[in-house]
Image 1 (tube, helix red, strand yellow):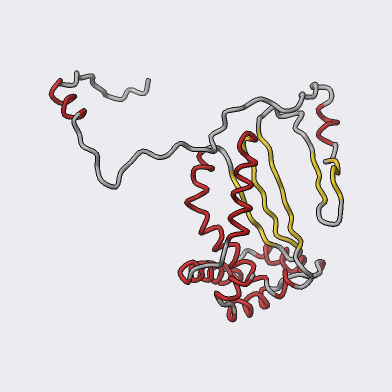
Image 2 (cartoon, rainbow, N blue to C red):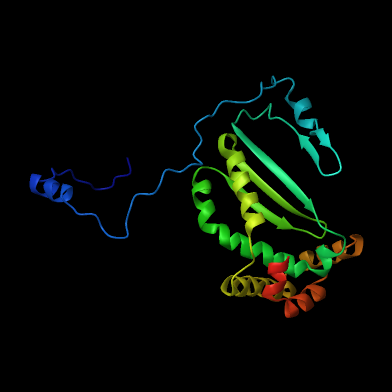
Length: 228
């Protein structure tokens, strides 16, 4: 089709026997079965007709639990006809933590993500993804992908958060360097980005200023991230 030169040659029997007789190489092995690969791709909900889709999309999620600990909302997919789901969890922070310890929270998030890199690779291959995002009011955890093994993935992510005992010195240094590089590029942003930043600071309470974040970074320690 593309005009690429090619040729076909028979593989000599001697070469085939040589390939079959290769010994195992130390340190190399086949990967274990990926537990996150979905096996059930059935849809959980009946899909809306083409005439009802606009109304279904306009509906918000329904509150299915509300008590002193949780508020839980749910909205089934009735439009896109895909066996996927998204779970969003917001963990509220005590007043002041999101501002007074913004950098500590950021270091904690970056080092946790660093620790999870190797673990989440099989999940990523299987069509799953996650994010952990801190803000001044809460920490948001989002997992999404094929719904068949999404609960398993979410459970593992939450377990990793609970059992995270703080960063190593190497992980801490990488996180601090990453934040420092981000802060150093702040003043080089285009004017419209700086304008949006100042508008946000003016209209939002509480909010983190770049000067405050730089002061926090200068004093953050690995012990702070471990305590957080």
